Image 1 (cartoon, rainbow, N blue to C red):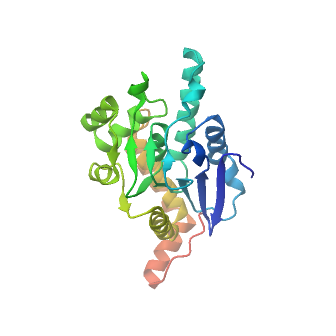
Image 2: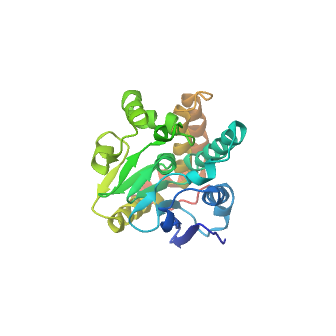
Image 3: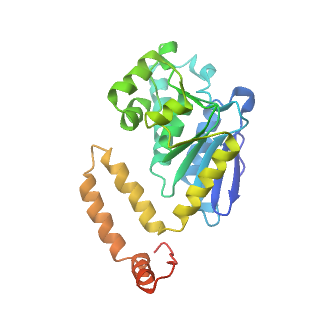
Length: 261
């Protein structure tokens, strides 16, 4: 796979996707969004032994400092709606991805960048990270899901405060309100912690991991009955080879060897 705006590295089944536009503070343009859509929609299938994904930004100044505003100038209502829908669909691919996706946030995560990290399953920030949704400063509302995901993560009242004031918050405040899982000193330490968490998850049943992500996401989808999804997925897990192996390993006091079947 060759990308123009993304760097891809496979480290023992952990795909590290780096948004590589440091000269533009890794701002999301059409190319970035198309390549993210391509990776999470189909390209991931060509990665040998894929277990999980880390998304980060090139350099230390920014994870993603927003969308590329220059691309907005000539859009009419229909084109703007289509742009928003494509971004939402792309981020939904990330949210519903069958393996864990962790955002390693370094520097600015603003606008579409904050929305990108919220679409990931977990977020680890370096101490210099800054989060915010500044769209109202431009006479806009968020277009890639912040109006929906931010209240889910931090509650309606605080989400409205951040969305309506366009305030930036620090990594520590983001952690205190539930937007971030962990804050560490720098990007290198954040990558190490993300890798450690993902290695721990990789020892669990991959079928169970995928179905857990699906069941949790169902809670936030008003078109689905989350409890029904849970009992259906539980039933599929319980007759799987992985469940049989897990039970046998427990009885035999050994580590389970899961195959994802």
